[in-house]
Amino acid sequence: MRVFHTIEAIYDENSKVLILGSMPSVKSRELGFYYAHPKNRFWKTLEQVYGEKIGATKEEKIAFLKKHSIALFDVLKSCDISSSKDTTIKNPIPNDFSPIFKKAKIKAIFTTGKKAYELYQKYCYNTTKKEAILLPSTSPANCKKGIEEIQIKEYAKIKKYTDE
Image 1: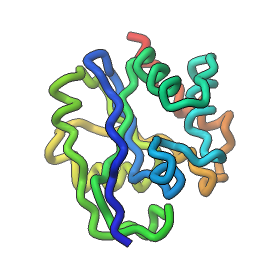
Image 2: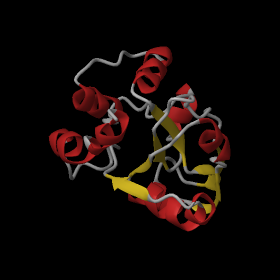
Image 3: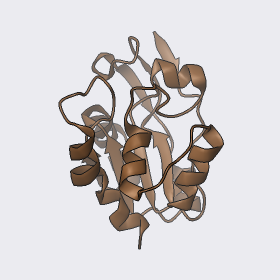
Image 4: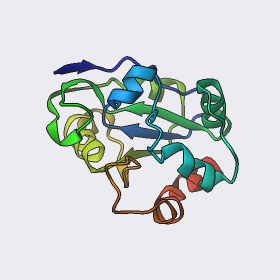
């Protein structure tokens, strides 16, 4: 099934870090916001990394991201995908990141999961010329790593750039 990215990128002139997923999940597309599946650990992980509650609303999440100079988007503009399974992605078309790079001074790009990293490397790196740092997926489908390992060893790397 052909899916189109319909969630706006979150960023402003103070964004220092860009976090990229592959494509919004079925639940995220349904609710119109990033990492909306209740079992996805993305928001809980950021709460642990920054030591503060984020809140449940879109507005609270956007305010948190902007407070910590984090931009959020996805690698793909559209693709053929079955359900929310990254492994089924075919015919990908990448998003255009130039508006983000024009407005913000992005110091680091992070991808949430191997597929987002691979897609970024294959379809975006030649245009952006900016290296991406691979982070583990926070998807409930990626249960190999616990939240402690994700937040402390991996996602804490984000703070190095946002706290500067």
